[in-house]
Amino acid sequence: MRVRVRRASHLGADVLAPGDKSISHRTLLFGALGTTPMQVRNLAPGADVRSTGSCLRALGVSIAEGEVPGALSVRGVGPGGFRPPATVLDCGNSGTTMRLLLGLVAGARVACTLDGDASLRRRPMRRVLAPLRAMGARMDGEEGAEDEGAPLRVEPVSTLRGMAHRLPIASAQVKSALVLAGLAADGQTRVREPEPSRDHTERMLGAWGAPVRVEEGEVVTTRLLRPLSLPGSLEVPGDPSSAAFWIGAGLLVPGSAVVVRGVDVNPTRTGFLAVLERMGARVELEPEPSRAGDPVATLRVRGGQALRATEIRPAEVPSVLDEIPLLAVVASQASGETRVSGARELRVKESDRLRQLVLGLRTMGADIDELDDGFVLRGPVRLRAAGIDAAHDHRIAMSFAIAGLVADGETEVEGAEWADISYPGFFRELGAATGQSLEVPP
Ligand code: S3P
Image (cartoon, rainbow, N blue to C red; front, side):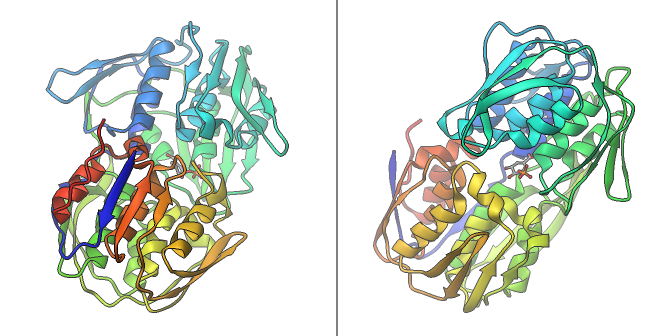
């Protein structure tokens, strides 16, 4: 599906950020470890979280229409309560579903197969499989040239052994999988990362009574002996990674006024705000009541601000991981040299994001060089419209839609429907905000 985006002369938006994807996956997955019903509002609307829901249903978790309109009711099975699924667990496009679910089923005494779409099948799974096998799990992927990938076969085991893990790369997905396996393991499971990744798993599990705590930067888990104490109701805060597209668009389009409400501003997720501040952008934060234990704010931004280049160093990368494609688009309009390093992980996301953003921005006239672990970009340049392939990647589709708003001519985003992975309705809302018709048919 191709969407044509034209240069915008104004942008007026007052939007609610859709529910956070990371917290939504975890709400469903951790909800499985409780036995009391939980009413969940503002669950992330995209296809990724639906994949988590359908896998959990196949394992016996009840996820149904909730008591209040728009809410879902989740009733878990408690630790050790999964039933053997009758079908393959289809994780769709979602790496978070596949990696966290591996941790959950590792010690669950059920046999199952996890699979996904072509993009997910290409993603590296040894980073989760190997440490889980070291804990005693029996699971195998398809052997590839450099790694193991889906389909993944999991065999039941009687118990797992806790152990200490040192992750070579910061990864919230790997950390979370090991913590979940630790809940079904004898002894202590310790996970240390080189830099902190998003901390939703340890915060949510800790708040819900699981034996998970953080000790000097290490996540320590012991066996979960009773069902989690789930809240009766929970409202998922808005996704900062989705909000970032609005903030970027607001900054780039002159004369714009953008308000994004209900945004999760957990510090492990808001590195993009720190980067934008260094670039000279003024983004106002007005606190809202916290949700799901996280701070929440309304974000406000105005267009036409002078932006300067900045450097994103390796230690900062985990906190801006999913926002780097959008930040590259913003940096193309900033004066000076922007440099990003330590971001090789972007090559193994839904697409090779470094390659896609360098190729796309270069076709639009940007002065950008690809590095093995990042890029160097010199701005500002007047972008020109081009045909951009979303490469089956929601964040590439949305980032280049924002680039199209400041490019001469008509930018064609091929594969715009991939935005539905995390943000269905994004193109419609962006069209409404800029007076263009950017409808993506369902
Ligand atoms: C996520 C973790 C990140 C991020 C992904 C969601 C999560 O991946 O890119 O979109 O919810 O745990 P890492 O495992 O590389 O941190």
